[in-house]
Image 1 (cartoon, helix red, strand yellow):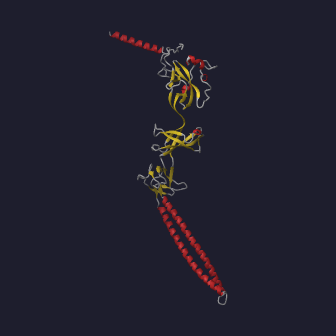
Image 2: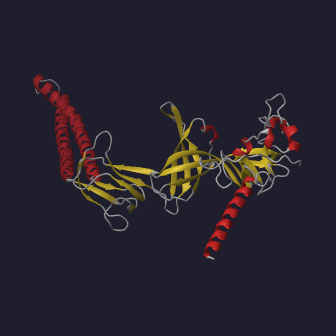
Image 3: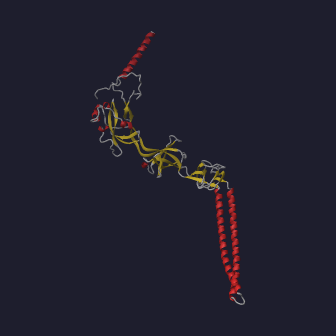
Length: 452
């Protein structure tokens, strides 16, 4: 009994295998398997854009330097009472750092002493002037008496000439005295200027913030010596407002003509994958740069950063929006490029699809559309997609619009969302297109010749 049951099971399994093989063999004969790769017509949004790479930059940056030389002795406190450092929020006038001011304090004291000395010199000059005026008045009176007497027995000629010379000398000395007073007063002004210079240099030893903002870079440390030269050494980099950011993008010269102020832009940064930021073109800088014979222009993009997520100097992957279509029918570009052989076209469409004067079996889309495919009507051009029709395909005339390189906007009578269009021919089994097993038996593949 057991042997009979085993024998029965073996026979049933064998019959099942033979039946499955036969069904697979005659599957193509019955026209049930469609050997075409297809894709659905989808409705969606189409965006035509230019891709570029840029850097996130603060909208306005202030570089704070030192105007005097010396050693950094300490840093100031930020708005939160902490030592000034990267990311510190500072107000206008906040002390950022202090430079050793011992030399500049000495210079101020010297300048102050010079001012006092110059002021004393003015007083001396004024006193000398008064003395000279007194001598002038005395010589003037003597000269007047000498003039009344004149050269005579009472006044010798030598004495007369002596009074005259004394008068003229005293008069000249008064003029000199006035000039000395002016000179002394000028010395005071000069000394005061030197004092102001010394005081200003002393004030420069305290580095303060010229604006309200956030410190994005601190370039010195305590104990470091800064040396002032023709170019002031940079100590701090302050961004005035990190809520408004810019993206500086290098755009190729071939695409720069499509960029204009106010153009919408989207971009992503690697720091926040999956999040898209939006902005608009602010300006196109005219100073082009050339790298390896490639000319690029810098485009400034303005974006809002109220969330504070964008950090300075992040790399941005930018998309300049050129055209946008919302809710249009889309087909893969392969559906517009693929052309079947004549044997794959439904019989009733073969006469219209066969190329006049062409090779046997050749299909041309020019025979299926009105006008040349390169002729554009507005932004659309006639084209053909192929729709599965049982074991064959049939053509469907459409108007092709914009393309993003992967999908194309289409419209046409009989075209609907969800419809399948052919993109190619399967080279393997229905479940594994394009995959073949060298050990699989080779069965003949024939196409049904039944009339339709």
